[in-house]
Every structure is written in structure tokens, then in C-alpha cells.
Image (tube, rainbow, N blue to C red; front, side, top):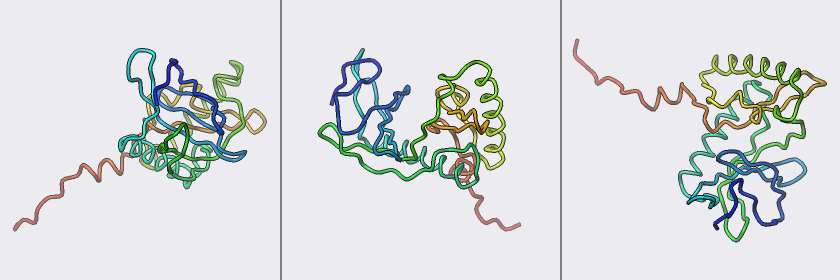
Length: 181
């Protein structure tokens, strides 16, 4: 399905479209859960949701990063549910399903709170590095974290550009052959 607007405003569906990022669209699936679907630009001002193998791999990667952070209690990330196919707009698309967070994003808060949230985000990035995760270059983008002013707590989102250094090292490693020494 082709979408005819730059920020991917989709026709009305049974799921409420919440936000668009540079690569993904987030839908409210229920009061507790949201789903992210990746899209791509097919030509100027023409976008489409992706349902190819690569989008499934990208969303699975993002789920795995989120799950590793969640299990290690880092970044106060949304609880990852999994990756499944979501039937929407006459097709089904790979979708990363996670807990729905109802806090304001970093780009929706005042400058004082944004400074606090940014410092907390940097602290969480350090913790992630300790378990072998390298944050994506857009991690400090205020649209990629939520901030709870009452708890003074940041909640990280959007892990598509993150790298699991331990997995990458393991996958890239060439093990030496047995040698007679």
C-alpha cells in the first residue's frame, strides 16, 4: 500500500496511529500495548509500510535489544512483548509489540526537565555499555525517550540503531583452526 504524505498519515484503521519516526510508525493496539511497523520512502512524498524479510529482521533486532535492556533493568524500557504480524490496511506487517507508555516524550517537556532527562539518559547509556550494548547515534534525540517528572525517571525507546557488541563480536569472530604447536 502506498502512502501519500511525508510523515505517513495513514487512513483510519481499527488501531490508532500515535507517532511516526524517521523509519517507523507506532500504533496503539490496546490500552496496554503499542506496535511499531517500519516504512520506507518509495519516491518523493510516497511512502509504504514494509512487510519484507529485512523489516522482520530489523524489528526482531530492536526487540532483542529492548529485551536485553529490560531483563537487566536498564533504561526503564517498555516491556517487550515480541514481534508478530499485524493485519492492517489489507495486508499484514511485521510489528514489534511492546508496553504502551503514557508519559510525555523528551520533545514535549520544558528545557529544565529536558536537561535532567538527558543526563539520566546518558547514565542509562553507560549502564547499557556495561552489558555490551552500544546506543544508536540518535539515542539523545528527545523523541527517543520519555520522562517521568514525578519519579525523575527516563524511559528509553527506539532501539533500531543500537548494536549488541557481544553478539556482533561473536557473529564476526573467526575461530582459529586447531594447530599443532
